[in-house]
Every structure is written in structure tokens, then in C-alpha cells.
Amino acid sequence: MSKMKNVYFAYLIRIFFVIVLFGCYCSKPVKIDENQIPLELRQTVNADRNTISTAIELRTQGWFYVPPQPKSRQAAWGNYDGRTTWWYGYWINKKNSKISARIPVKQQDGVYYGDGIDLRLIWRRGGSPIYPSKLELLLSLPWK
Image 1 (tube, rainbow, N blue to C red):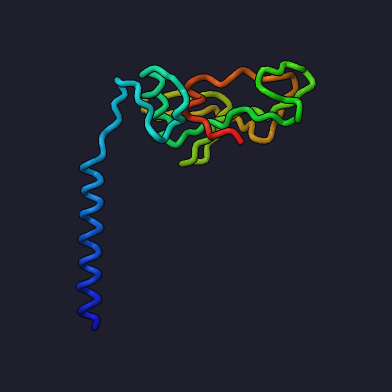
Image 2 (cartoon, helix red, strand yellow):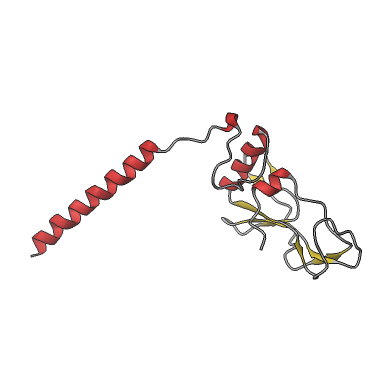
């Protein structure tokens, strides 16, 4: 009986490797020169090749952007009423748990580093913030 289980297990492993190898063979690399946006990035943004390649580098290293969120009921994009309140937008790296208030900057070693300022629980008054850039939108988590 155990010999039959071993044969069955070996058969399943072979099928698994065939599926994995076939998947790797069939997958196409992303062609950035056609301004195609990979599925890991937000699809609704029309961006140029340089912005897309920067976004791919940032996402590969684990960076995401959390856009500003309205805190008060009256807060909305384009409403510049100074009485409204907003949560700040910030950058977060899912791989190493680093935080940044500004767009991470690429250093000489090819790694993107943030400024370390944590704005996750801080809010501001003063109306609608500046709308996120195309890079921030590409790397943003969906709004609620």
C-alpha cells in the first residue's frame, strides 16, 4: 500500500513541475516601450515609459502609496474649504516595513530609500490636498 502512495506522490510532483515549467515558458515579460502597465500596478493611469519603469522598480522593492483619505464628512477631492480634515498620504514598504512621507529616492546602490517620516496617524486641516502624481497613482492602494 505504501508503494502505491509513493508512486502516486511522484506522479503528482511530476504534474506540478510540468505545470510550473509550462507557466514560466508561456509568460511574457512586460514591454515597457509600449507603455503597457503590468498587473501589479494600478491600471487606470495613463503614464509615460519612464514613470512606468520607475513604478515597476519601486513595486519590485516593496513600495506602495497610500493616498490621502478624507477624515471629515465634508472632505472631498476639489473641496478647498479650510474646515475639512484629511489623513495624510504616505509611502509604505511591505517587504521591510519602512515608511516615508515623500517619494522614495533611488540611491547609488540601486535601492529606493524613504525619509522615515511616519504620517499614518496624522491628519491635517485646510481643504483638499494636492492630487497624487501619476507615479503615486500607479503605486497606490485602491481608495475605500
